[in-house]
Image 1 (cartoon, rainbow, N blue to C red):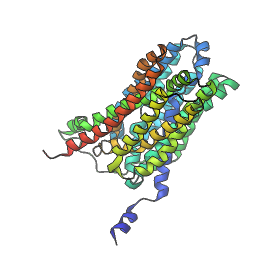
Image 2: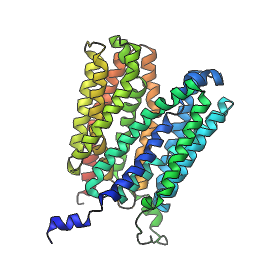
Image 3: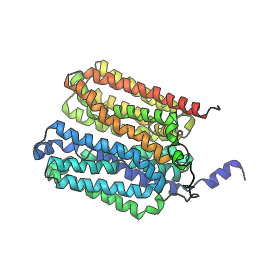
Image 4: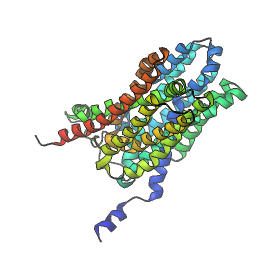
Length: 411
């Protein structure tokens, strides 16, 4: 048997890999969906709870701070107990939080269920990447990361598309209760297919060894892990600016009609998903992932610079958002491979938990800086800050490679 035929013989069936990728992607959709449960309903919640926008925004801060803490800790649970029970618990908590939001009669009840929602959301990245890394064949991993990113973007797009029409037609409580039904429906689907989410059995760990506690935290000594953490912190800043401030800043700079501004983020997310499809093919060769990340975010930075400084017609702005989204999406699967290549064997949950907690921290910090720029009318400054963050992503990607090579170099 030739080497090629031997490789094909050991490659798992496409249906098997596709089943795992689809189930993990469905769970990831609910994770991103849960992050935008409340924000689209702020106009209704402001009156119902007699709360200011600052107070409503603080509900999101509670959510992301909780999610950050849980994300770092849940990776240890995933490595110890497996990803499946942790995933089921996360989905159950997200659904419970949505029903709790719907039943809330005060701001502080909302705050309490924001903690519950953060607890649920915090488990998804350590779970998802452990399942993908251990259940999907290496040759299809780039496509797995691509689908994972696409479903996340679809979750962000689904939240306002579902919640706002339901709130208009019925009430904000009906919208949130429907979100709870959706989360629990996905949980039922995953429970029915739980055999596809079971990890292969491995030899039991020698937990009685005196070195076991040290080994549990050895991954924290790897410089590349912390460089990945920094990379995702900056990535979260970029994402937060695009989602919360960039469309409005572009409206002021280029006199964009409100109707066009409302569609900019949707265009960005849809084009980002398209970029991730192509990015999945480009990520087939893991050795070039840093170059793909640099190229993607480099193109996105150029587009952002043009929007921030050049005189553009209003109709061009959604197109520019689409180009920026496609370029960023192109880098998505390779971005995840940066972490995969820095992850020690049997530490996937812990590494992805620590690294992706940078996302929550970045999304909690970015509004403070860029919100201040918006309040003071520094709309060009918002776009230049976005360009700077995208440029920093390029540098961070190559720093991850440098840190990884340093760790692998012989002493």
